[in-house]
Image 1 (cartoon, helix red, strand yellow):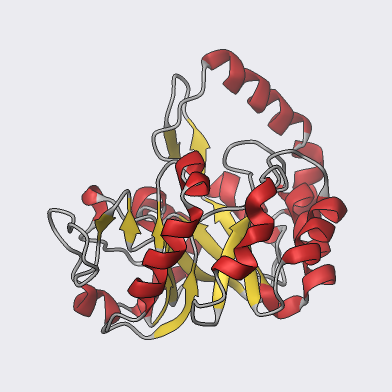
Image 2 (tube, rainbow, N blue to C red):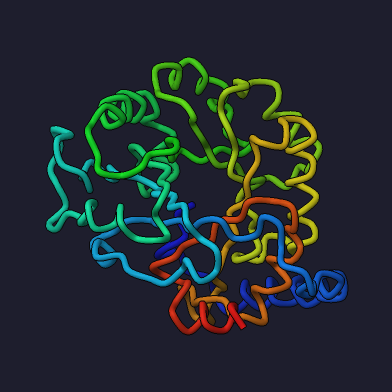
Length: 287
């Protein structure tokens, strides 16, 4: 998921807001339940950039204990030492991060590009660099790896991924979204056709960009779970909303609570912790 820096016009945002409003009646069916969500928020996503190399937060108060790092190399610059590529100006303190309560387990993102098109055009190179990254020592308690070239049914070359990713260690994860809006069953069937059984999926819910409502996103997750199996499907919860005039803001607790409640029964990862899940939002969600 690469939403930082995108802009929406006021007219486009107005259409999206109208769609979201029309879906409110359905979404209200998913107001926060009395009982805690199961398993609920288990992790946060971090999209490393120069502004967030000093990542800090109190996301453990929401139940997060696993950190999904979107990438450790992006745009040919490394956030970890030893890759053979230029490092970013300041490296994250991975030893300190490993001790954080919200990073007791870490899924290590590998090599990507911020531009989706560039990632897809250079998929072979990214797979080769990713293989090298995965062999580097780390102080983190690594529970898996994430290949950050996001897939959707419009990408015809996605079916080449099994061969390219064969040398990467397992557990291995990718993320998927339905940019073409072909529907839950069709998206799940498309993945089932080519995705190896030992690769799991993070489904991007699309709620933060008003692509769909949370109840609709739930139907995608259910279809993926039916085709791929319960343990191979997790949900990335977009904890942001568009700003008028461009850019994004943190979702409010009132926006996020019904979104979370719609996904009861799934492991949830908030996107993304440092940029959008602020201490104020954590406090409001924890009430």
